[in-house]
Image (cartoon, rainbow, N blue to C red; front, side, top):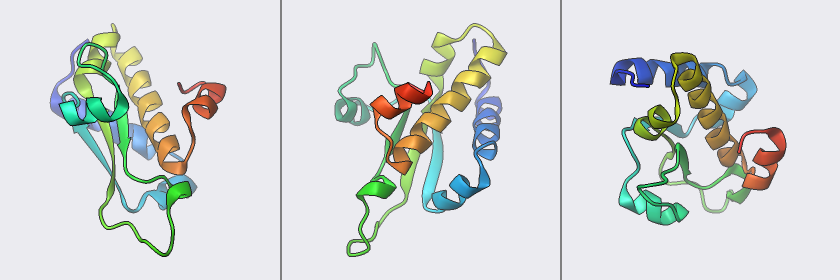
Length: 124
């Protein structure tokens, strides 16, 4: 399944808009960015390869890791990777659903949830 870059960006924006307001309000210092694919640095950081890339990635310190004594100096970023998501989906509906799952998964990492908790919730 392929989407234009603009259509993919809009699908990601819709997924972000569906996040409950009380969670979105916590994300004031979080950038949501779409990339075609992860960089080698990103792959190395999460222990993955270009042959098996992540669908998304949270880059920053979770809310649980933060301290008022050392404030964040840069915005945290949630990356959503278009090509890996397109490669796993056959229909537009499936792609939009996977985009939403990916966004929720990465927002959960921002909130401090680990992979085990995400699996319990059905987002791993």
